[in-house]
Image (tube, rainbow, N blue to C red):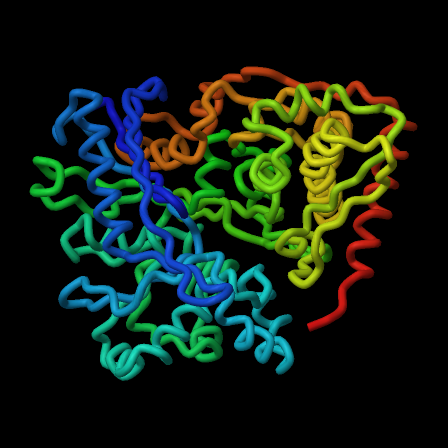
Length: 500
């Protein structure tokens, strides 16, 4: 049994990947599922769609690889974090659609809790800010808005879980209600210092303890699938939230190593080791992974708009037909122009956390055209990454340009132009790996580690292969001039905030 099956359950699709013992990919299957938008700012998934698409892709991947359940040493699960499911303990039936991490319906609840002065205590325990993004207020909303749900939850009839937890419960036929420390750390209900569900937080967010899953290591015995699903039982042995799984897939096991994933948005995590680092720059403190009962922490920064800015060039402005055209177009831009795009289409994420401001272009001239807009769009992703990088270095005294290694993954990293500009603006090397499927690989590694297919982290890190290292080549004067221009542009956008 030298194969591992990774379930990568994302926001718009479910994927399954079979990895060999040398971490090469044997098969991939993917299936999209519907998104539901019942009101402005609301985003929901049908839990049954998540479940059926997951099972179908697992079966497809096994078939493509020519394997049976007997060939699979273990299953690893990685998932869209913070998305919240509440279901019936007896039947497995969800009492409401899953409320997705992007959903903003609990903004008023969060605003009230902040106004009452709860955020400092919540942040001290969880490493998070009070925001609709996280699961805690989503659970309470379901209990308050589904008739009879709160009473049933108080009687112990309902269960809560993030998507990994829900899938595990279904995979094991309702035998195991568990999650891992990385997913627990995104709920606003978990004390990341003690590694336990926190009674004071449960009371504040009004979530009954009986609903909560057991919290395990990220690599652990999570039970066994029912034989009917895949033609035989398979152990589930690894779970991590998607951004943490990507950190593991990038082998960022040493403090000072940082990964940045470029998809629709961008998520950067900096490994800070055994000590949780409190941020003074509006970053999140989170659990990167937990192995053998020991927690490793990270600082995390989220950028709302990365790849979606390129989609705007394509779909909104129509100046490109394919994303791959953006780099060559940017390369033709007029070097005498300094055009800045602040892509605050849905507000600004870390380190600003201002959802009210909107995007703006600065420095336009009569000669500004498609090439300059492409240039500004790709550069905006690099500037935003620089802001996270600078915030992380300010928050973590151990960080220095010499020790931080940046490993990148996600669709945008295919653009050599963008990665080179990123290295230039950070004044640090940017490493792009051979295997881009780092999220699924991280889940596979956690499962394979427990099953004995993959070695300890230090040895696994030796398997990480560099595809290309981008080295900084920009003069210090040019870098400083460009970063100063970006800072002025962001200041202008923040100044446009008209309040609620």
